[in-house]
Length: 363
Length: 131
Image 1 (cartoon, rainbow over the protein chains, first blue to last red):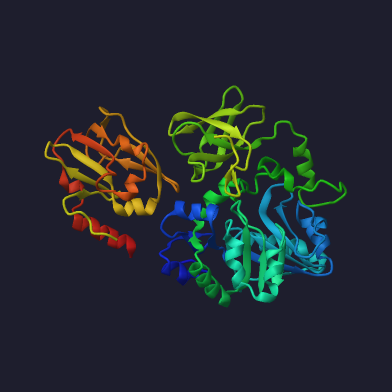
Image 2: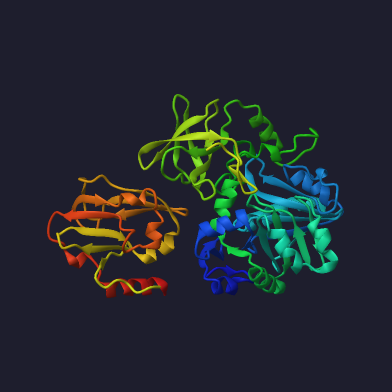
């Protein structure tokens, strides 16, 4: 049996099908992945994401440390509460993990990293932190939920103490704040508006019950995956890993090249790859024939070469199959995918596929 | 979990088959299988007239979550496929033992019932998987 989140018994109560995810027993779905998916696109869903690893970094030189550790630049974080999405690279420019960093105050930054990468992330961060005299504390005692969807914030607001409520509702996207025992951030992994809320484990069950009673739909990891795929948000371990640079994973935008004298881990190899005309594309694909795109299917680009689907699946919002794929360099919009020996047609499309409830590609 | 239909035979791959009066067999996947795989979005069916070997894959059912092969439980020839699944694959979720049937085979010889499971034997298998 794996580790259990504080809400584990609530998942069982709600009829969850439980799977192992990075050593945690997590709900895959509570009945219908598709219904959960639609609930988030049209109303509000709640995900238990307590398996995510929260790490607090403290010290006078914590900002300097993170400017060295991360490929995005925390110098961009000027207001307390502001968040930044970034990769943490190894010395070869491969991705150790992707994460969100919050600027709490000048001597305190908070990281939220993936569950499956917890051990190696903590080892790496601790090793790199030493010369900067930064303390690294995992906050395993905290639980975390994501409430996502067009009605999410409105439905959660009554659960926030009155003194913080309006400030929380006024949070801009990618900002967080402390609200008593809670940490509330307007972030997520679905392409919808909403909050991610960190709280002491003891409070998690009560919040869960209250939100379900208010009509928020409990959602599992399966819906989380189709939602993030439609939003074209990368999944660590599928779309990138330590052998893949952010430049070949569609994460160019997360690399802060300026100022050009900022030394961050992996910068050298990344600069070389940036100038390489053979560097692979990372694109969105729409399946034009019937069928379903799946991870690891082979993509054939006639006259150019081959690539691979890194995340594929069925899009409940579009009603068609979509994928993220790493393909050979070149200027082309059409390719074929090998599905059980048959070549089906796929079209390269501009991502995201879906955002804020709306289909954003031409179908 | 609902009661298993008593007039069907089952396989350890969570398929069912019904012996029809004309000697053909109708094949589908069990309620347990449809619940595990979740919402179906695509079904790849064989051609009518195609020969299949016992244990060989003859169809693919794809849910939002995963693709899963449907195996031939007997040697035979495909005599009918459930074309309506092309437009409505969720029929398998809604009615796994009736409207959600997948393939009808004409067995090429006698069916060896020793390779198949009775409702009780299949129920035991489910109970073991549960435990």
